[in-house]
Length: 571
Image (tube, rainbow, N blue to C red):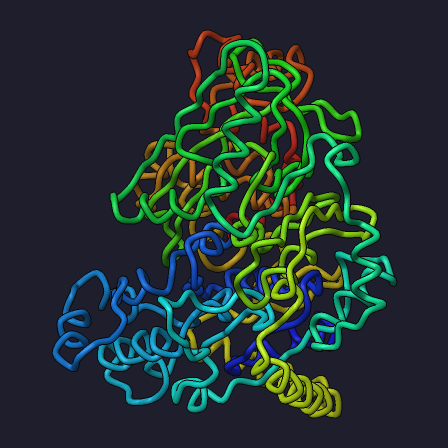
């Protein structure tokens, strides 16, 4: 199934299990769906099975979202107690679409506990209290964490059977383009590793002298990772610099973000340290997994990273946020780097790498080798230092289940393929309207706008609300207060609107004085880019980071045309 076919099905409001091999575009597809929901005025509840996965999607763990915490089982009384908590009940009552990432790492017991709480809160005795539920993941990857006992997968639960999700199995490949390497990965996934595949991998078995400098090392155990990172950093000359993570929000939410964030709370670096970016750059300068070395420090003391391609990137802190119902509940800020000498296979899940040194000599879990190897784009980027028999094995139960998933996906593809476009669109309209959203029609230029409204009148949902609030508010502080959001989040929404082409300077220029904008523009020009820290320090801290971002936006946004002004008055 293609991403476009899966997206068509997701938009109908069906319960869906979205799966596919690593690199098939699961994250891209679900992000497209989330964007479509928000543009339609529907805020999804985005959760994940683990803290790391939750940070990738700006959500929270399902355990936290549902209030079940670390419980392994719940009595009826405990379900009642959780459901009676005001913040949990409010969250679940407001929910419309529940998305659960990394479903392979969620046990059947946990899945059913979250379901029980949703039924109790919503007073509807159907799976998850009648919510539309989207499950995302690949059961060939890491399974639920167990404490010395077998753990049933989520699909073994009665809740899964009652949900009866349509399976969308993505079959296109966007990460690997090396046919020989793809053949090895496919053999591991099918449980058909033969001597030829083993020999192919062993051509990448390297001694210490042949290992590339700067490539991350993947291990199965945390102890090896901590030891390697500490040893390699200590070998470098000179004093180290430490960068502390800052945070905002409720302690429990902050702690969840910190556990899942790939950047550490205390980031210790030296000149020449091998590092990896842990977040995607909004400007496309780097992605989660980009490798480099610390090549110096800028005027404000921030690290400058030189990538393998010779690109020098001056860094600055970025935010990881936990959003709920369109509002930021907690955030942490840190330079988006981590030492790249070593990391666990578990923490690498979801990353794409050009090269990795992989030690699978102590692999102990089904799927560990498959996850580690599939992080790398080409066979030439794999450097094996150890490999045991367990490393190339996947869970035998999943092999059989995979045939069912593929057959179910093909049946769904055929059903929707035979459906007239008007019928599919009708289902999508019904879904959006049932959840109180606004149907988005295509404009002649292919953009989407709310049905029955002129182009330029804005978007429904969180962005539309922010846009209208900003237009009416005399200051940024007033806009933030009116929306109940942080000023930084208001600016972030404006940046998102600018990226979609729906923001003009007249929408927000009143939030910043012309003199301040001119001064910041000059500082941006002098800094030779669009980075915030050099400008902040060059101007002596007279302007906040939010004000600098607003000034930067005035350079990117188009002036309002006459028709746009007319539309704005009608909004």
